Image (cartoon, rainbow over all chains, first blue to last red; front, side):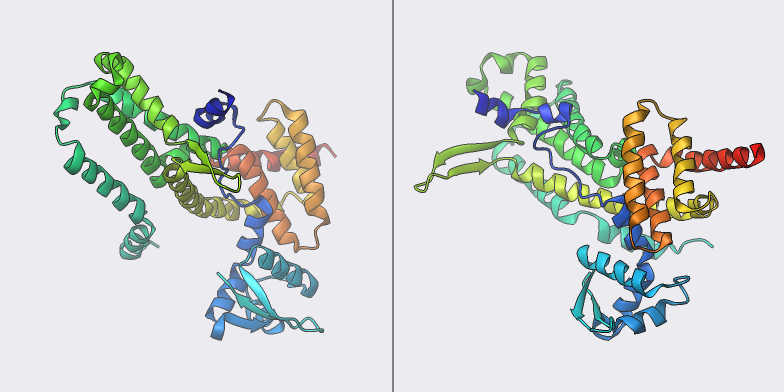
Length: 103
Length: 263
């Protein structure tokens, strides 16, 4: 009986709990990262093979991203990597990684 | 400058959920042609509206519950509407089943109001069911996933509603970003926004503490300040909804001015 009520119940509509799948709404921080990174993504998508070295990427997006900071921009790229918007195709010991657009 | 019409139309067409539309269309047509030809069973039956309404309402609640900040907007978006209409159709088809298979449903089919209620709610229940039908040799439950169609439709609806909302959310945050920055350094801006928000809402203590935790975690991130301000905007936008967001930001600005005048 318990199983039946579990299978057929529409309780989750009322209680907000249970099996109702949640939407894939991104977190506010993810939304912010993606919005801020629009120039990065545009530059990568326009590049041959959709990839650029990190320094070149910073150079190309400098007019659009005010006061770019190397370390912070690298953190942005890492965040984009976690969100699967880009991948670091080749690591560079001096930070000039090869970045490729995934999406 | 006015937007060109043609790209908008083609963009809308490419965004249109073709596969479920075609799928549902073919299903309805198939059911009609193969099985349910005497649709006259439903002709003149006003309770058909009740079945459809119940089905649509359940679909509406499902969508609205996922978008607590803007439930109405989500429900009235193209995909929210499609999801509701599909649910309404299921209710109508279920009602037809009840009348068509009178010998199975017995007295239920004789009471039109009860039949309509059972069809609307019953279709919703059955289509959200995953029944274990037997155990496989390795002891696993083999399930009949009746909920597959609805889950897929809901996942598609969610995806499209998210896309639909993302642009308007970004535009709104971008429009208010100057005002948010003008509130001062990140933490100060967050405090003014929080004070402004609390003037709008009750049940504040829990929310205040959760917000402070989020804001503190953002402050510590090694990301550009611009991202932190944007994230702050999205946090408050999610909390108050698109209708009140600009008002909350404006109020925060007023609070800042009042505070500086008191100094």
